[in-house]
Length: 204
Image (cartoon, rainbow, N blue to C red; front, side, top):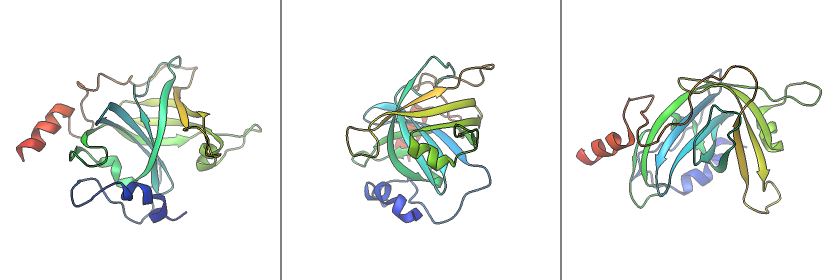
């Protein structure tokens, strides 16, 4: 599917004359796929978890954020695909616009796809997501180690709303951080909190 088609829903929800969010452009990615976790103070305060798949960021809203504890199963609700440039987006989406509120980049980095079939052969990452289960290893500033996304409700048949679980893989030594108090969390890009980003936006 062409990049412009994959971003149709994303672009249709936004007025780029008003919001500083990237509109997205044609072009392939770097060698290693990227991930980003953003904290978004919108109508509800939540974390956005995004994985690069081909030329877009597949995205999930994770109310409580990722956990380094394999016992924690974090709800992840899929949202529309975002452009690759969204990895760097930090700022205030104007009130009245879709997703209006403050965004910071809590963590970002690269990831390694780990999905295999029952015979141990690697499975294309996009295909593993289509099937409803994908494993991957994050290499970020704060999140490191193996995680999995598993669809447990809804799917391709147009039934009830699709929902996933984001879980830290069990086994081995725990790495990285749990999701922090989002109000106190600092951006990995700028070192700012949500409150500082919002205050600076009001001063402009």
